[in-house]
Image 1 (cartoon, rainbow, N blue to C red):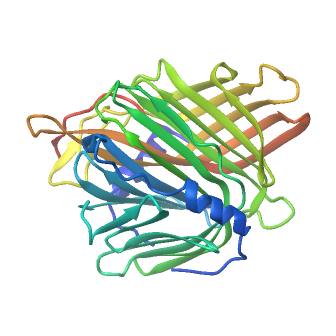
Image 2: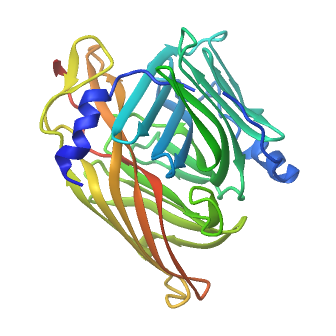
Image 3: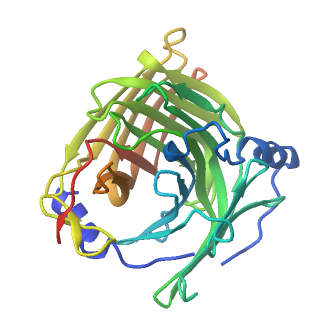
Length: 390
């Protein structure tokens, strides 16, 4: 796909509204739900913690190849701005749409705790039940709704912790809560309703203390094999997730990990020098309007990958565990991150959230693995940019 074809729907539809109804699924393993109720709980700042550096969010996505439809959503807490944020995006055929809502980080507007993964931001909620994660997002007038049940199918990954990077007081944590989920629900936008029936989903959770204007970036992604014996959009046997924390220019890696699940369990992992990630980058060659009054990102301020290649090989067992992975971006969505400097001036960084096609080939546990499926990728790079007039 040409760069111009990818960028056009971003610029024409990036800030239209979208939002999020509820259908039951078979209950997952009760012990898995109990584990997730603990490991996926929130981490409110303590009295000694640097509240101004606090960041935490839930991320969910669902992909439906049959309808050429995908939805992503993020529930984010931002200590620097004392704000809570709901970010949603969907792509349907050739249309990309995103929504960005900001609310006070105040009791009564936001509810979260260290005892639960549940979070409420205005009328938007994540609730872990014995059936799975009930995710609900709606517009203020209630006309645009995404309502879905995300049922976890695999064990969570071990949480990672990186301290002292990018700054001495920084701490970055992450958890792949469920690399493979089954999703039922509906998305209603502008009078049209899309139904998800046993589609493939994903959930991760990130938290810690860092400043967005620091010298750091990241890339992460995930894809689940299609079930070839049934509907082409249902979950298959294998799922994988990767992450790489870098400096802002992506020339140095601080921490990298690729994890592979087979069935319900982790079956292989690759880290550090066992991973090589390369990108073919592109820029937007015009200003990009932001969801704030009359401002935009300057031309060429933040790149994103059109193509990504990943090579993974276990140092101890390269013949038994090795993968070659390709990713082609099809639907990129821009999520702005606001940074306010000491003088009160606003600058921005960008999280690129991308849906695209993965090609996975290699050997896991001595067995050949080969599949193609749509998945997601996230990319953060570059230094903060001052906005320009739109």
